[in-house]
Amino acid sequence: MIQSINILKQVWQLLCSSFAGAVLLLCSTVVAAAGFPEKPITLIVPFAAGGPTDVLARVVGESLGKVLGQAVIVENTPGAGGTVGNTRASRAPGDGYTLLIGNGGTLAVSATLYKNLNYDVLTDFIPVASIGDAPQIVSARKDFPATGLDEFAAYLKLNAAKLNFGAAGVGSGTWLGGQLINVKLGVKVNGVNYRGAGQAVNDVMAGHIDYMVESTTTAVKYVQSGMVKGVVVLRSKRIKALPDVPAAGESGYPDLLYDIWNMILVPKGTPAPVVAQLGDALRKAIQSPDVRTKFEAAGIEMPSAEQQTPAGAANLLKSEVARWRPLIIELGAQPE
Image (cartoon, rainbow, N blue to C red):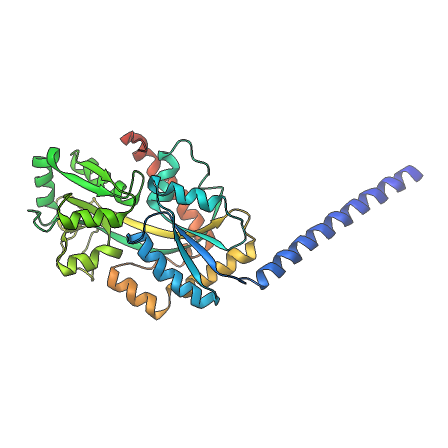
């Protein structure tokens, strides 16, 4: 009897100790979140400055800083199709002071393309919110002789061997766009990879390469100024920002559609209250009048309300990894 009582006492002490520990952890997490942020936040962009991901990061980062009352500092960490920046972010403390911007290429595609990553995109990061969906456009050198997808397809089929498209590295969204065109049109145009989309755009403008699949985030201003030629928007309908550029839906290839989603993530271990606070702040940031105006000018669309939440962004990331895996395997692509 006495032995049973002693065992019960030990169990009770253990339960009390565990409960106290849980309460202490919860309290410390809440306190940490209550004081967040107390210093500037770093937003890692896994590409060089000047590309569409960088431009979007700076627009959203500036607005986010105003919402949070702290500066958001953009840190460009280019290389290997975004995986260098992703690695840097995965090794940062999970305290909310390091953010990563990623998209379908740097997150969903790289998860299958790269066999020996130092991180797992689905377990080493916590998605916070999807922040903008960018239509993709084929932008070409100014003297490119085709307009619209039908003419573009016919020209590629006759001249593929002597053409080059630009991309921000194997696995990037620009690379995937070029590969999608190859697959859908049954051609094999060579891809030339750069450290960032901005460098590829410069070579398209200079006529050193023929075209690239580019986000409207940066393409709109170049097309409007005549520095590049807008060949086709890879959407079912034309976009408001570029009403004179034909849409894929007007062609004989109406299923050649391609958008790039973008999201903000934090390293694993970031406290749930901090993730929630960042999510709320990001929603306010992208819905500000200034950001909405800039998004509209660049043809960027707001994600669904669900995808602007951590749970919705996590579901998007998981489903996109599964969506692109078969195509990457079919391409047999290898990182450079």
